[in-house]
Length: 298
Ligand SMILES: Nc1ncnc2c1ncn2[C@@H]1O[C@H](COP(=O)(O)OP(=O)(O)OP(=O)(O)O)[C@@H](O)[C@H]1O
Ligand SMILES: [Mg+2]
Image (cartoon, rainbow, N blue to C red; front, side, top):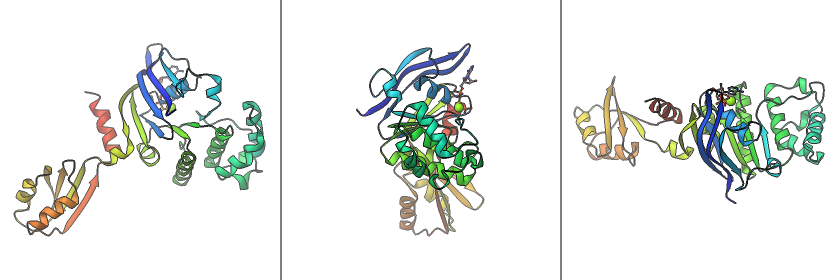
């Protein structure tokens, strides 16, 4: 079964507020799926519905091609908000309690602590942990039941750059085990660094979905400086050119798909122009995300 989760026309209303609006999406096995959107766009509500902790208004969703059931829920590890651990108990003792509540074996505890790199600190009290360690412990607790799907809501919130990097690497490692990961984030950078697929939500509506890889294939902007007098004309005559704009002593060039700094440079060299400066920039996910958000306002 290739499809892990399919959501069809899902709507959730809180009174007059439509938190999720006719959302449809499909998540395939082994993907790291990013649910990207600004604050209040419906990410947490969507995750709450698919975890069966929030009732939806209309539409449907299926786990593993079947009507959701308790059995499916056991295959899903989730962190919706920072779970409450006992401050005076160690990681081990806290995880024993979680295992008990979830009715899963405690045999896996050492293993998950190693996975999140807390094994060395396993006997220390929870209250002595840094925020990043606390977050890693919550990931460990979600891993206890050896889930095939992990759902993470803003897993790096409040962490410093090192903590963020640790969590991101951990997510990538977890995905290598073949687990499917669904990650909600308002951070574009996070989605770009971690996810394989993503959807952009705005006011509960999905306004874009695609591969993260395709985004970085996006159009390329090239900066060029050259001494030649006829450089502008030459650039304008290049077949891949979309636009040429002067910027101080540089030219900012935007290229059509299939053209890049290399093909442009080859063209310039063929026309006896040697550039003194050539920098290529891919349009970042951030820029595209902002464009998509802005376009959907119109
Ligand atoms: N229990 C609730 N009662 C009423 N409105 C709610 C409730 N929970 C969420 N909402 C509203 O639903 C919308 C979506 O909220 P949600 O928490 O799903 O967004 P989010 O994308 O997770 O945002 P954030 O990035 O801030 O976590 C918001 O307008 C929010 O105010
Ligand atoms: Mg949220």
